[in-house]
Length: 269
Image (cartoon, rainbow, N blue to C red; front, top):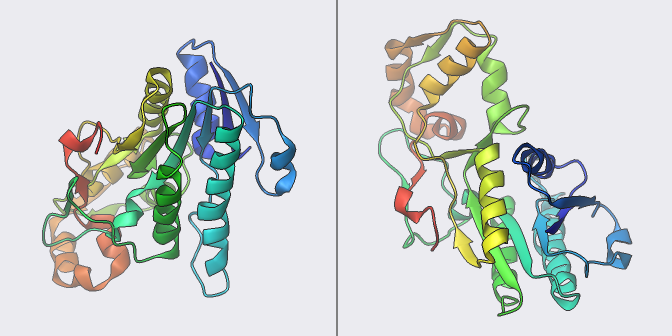
């Protein structure tokens, strides 16, 4: 099996190659940069699948960079898929996001995403990813499988984004709020395993991969600290304070709010 990964320095892509090596999977994994138009002259015909992970994420949104989200996350994705289909690639795996639902979580109640939940993105990131999905679905055919993965927070060794911020916090503080919440997450190895499975089986459709168990943010931070020889006390008092005004502050909802995908939706929508 030959797989072309977009984004030479992408975390998901590099970890995918590492995981395939750990599994003694005799796959040829190549990388291609899509930062300029040079990829357009590349030959995709020798590849069985494209794993498209390159995109704009973890970047503060402004009016000035709005168009970049659509240029990269939507238009580039569509152009890559068109080229892949024209050149006989069998599968195109697109790393999308739960941000298409416009939810960050809620401290006071459960927020549960099911197959009936309608996407209502409220960020350029979420909107551009959803519009990319819609364009990709038009290309799906018997000979060209479109696989869309709406993933929650990814964690693992040296992972970027929100998990990285929590990890750094866990190593610096001694007290952290104790709040009973549930969040869907996925370990990078689990994500890589899923991508391997879907490429091997030639599936198509919309999927919601996640870990088998939901994560409690407070317990996760404590566990990160423990693994690094650091102790954190989980304070119910601080947790109660955050509950009083947490839903008014977006970042607190993002950290402590409830946001899960129904476990039975793991396979396919």
